[in-house]
Image (tube, rainbow, N blue to C red):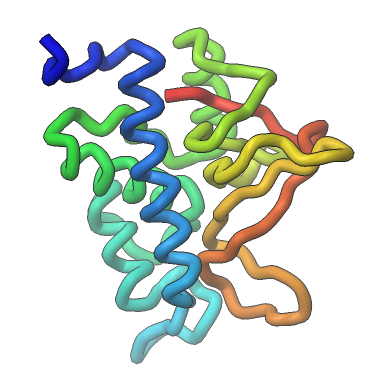
Length: 169
């Protein structure tokens, strides 16, 4: 029975899907995915070839904030690799995602790689490493920028544990 797939609600299932989702998110950050705009929209307006792909996969709607859509897409790609259902719900608002996490008893206070983070009730990211000293949570986030480069895209970032809630899918 060593080849049996873990049950979808088990910690092993979360770990398998989450590990792949983290690897995918890191690869996207390394690739340098940025909003590029299109003929009708300038940069930093929620458009771009790869950004559009994330949005299409999530809910077929372009031009929206895409932080949660990106995390959904990462989990979708991981689930496809494992031939399982995507554990990320089709909820793309940060506050609504927090409410879902509470209702489904999936909020955690000990974030681990693959957990979804919601910062200050309005932004979604993916935890990529265990919590560091001083309550720093390494993450990959999108529909954001980092440092002095104000180009919306996918970036490795760090968030304060105290400013986030965490959801384990």
